[in-house]
Length: 109
Image (tube, rainbow, N blue to C red; front, top):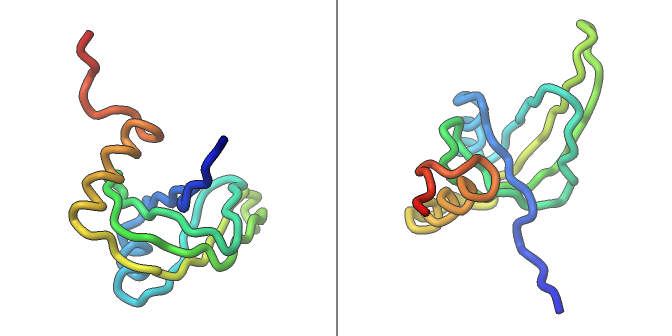
């Protein structure tokens, strides 16, 4: 028996301006170095540069390309679904630290 999670992806902003645009205007773009996969139509949890969960976003477009400088980049267009409540943010931030970003505190044996 299995289950399907509502959120199967994370979207971490490394640029405060990109994060501001999505939170302020409801739409924005995210630029990542290298080729990345962001499935169009998928919901993701958006994280700040300091790994705090802030919102649920929808991936509306994902374009991987090699620019004129020969760099591999991926540009992702996002729509804001909604901002997270304080409690949701706290729980998802703690979960992400354990699953993706590494635990903040060392484990005690």
